[in-house]
Each structure stands twice: as C-alpha cells, then as structure tokens.
Length: 119
Figure 1: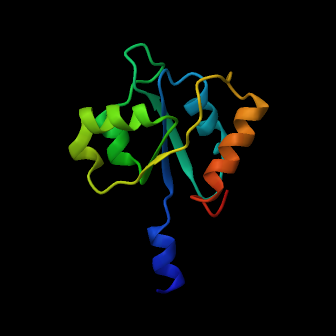
Figure 2: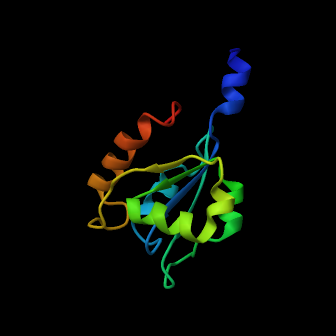
C-alpha cells in the first residue's frame, strides 16, 4: 500500500459524541481547534444536548468517537443506516469531568493516540 493511499484512508473528520455535548465531547472537539490534520465536531445524544446529533453529523464524519457504549447503542438505534461502514470507537470515558478538565484532556489524548497518528 502506498503512502498516498494510507493518507486517504486516514480519518480527517472526527465526530465526538457524549450525552449533553457540554463537557466530554466538547472538550474533545476543542483539542482539535486549528489542528493541521484533523477537523472535529461534537454533539450529544440527549434531547437537552447543547448540539443534538443529527444524521448530517454522521454523514460528515470519517470516524465517530463515543464516550460510553450506550452512546454507540443510541446512535445505532436511531441512525443505523447512516453509520453503515463507519467506524464507531468507544473511548470509555465516564461522565465525571468538567469542560477542559486537565484529567479529561489527558485521558482523551491517551485514548485517541492509537486511532489518530497525527495527534
């Protein structure tokens, strides 16, 4: 496989999902502000989310990162067709962090490193 085909297969548009889109997924999105290799967006699964996930978010993303398994389950139930063939990665980050909390940032970087070579 050539380097060029590897580049094409590498995810560039990242979607981060949590429940309310206020702390975890929004923090993950902020990690990629002005990043040269990745563009990130975030959304939440719950009705009161800051930005509620829609099919357009999923269509835009190359890869979807969820904070908990239940987020992946909700996405598959509501948007199964839009997720067909799209990687969904569970980062296993519990809902116990505030926006941009240093430990949350550290956890996100650690868990994303194996999926994103240019982090």
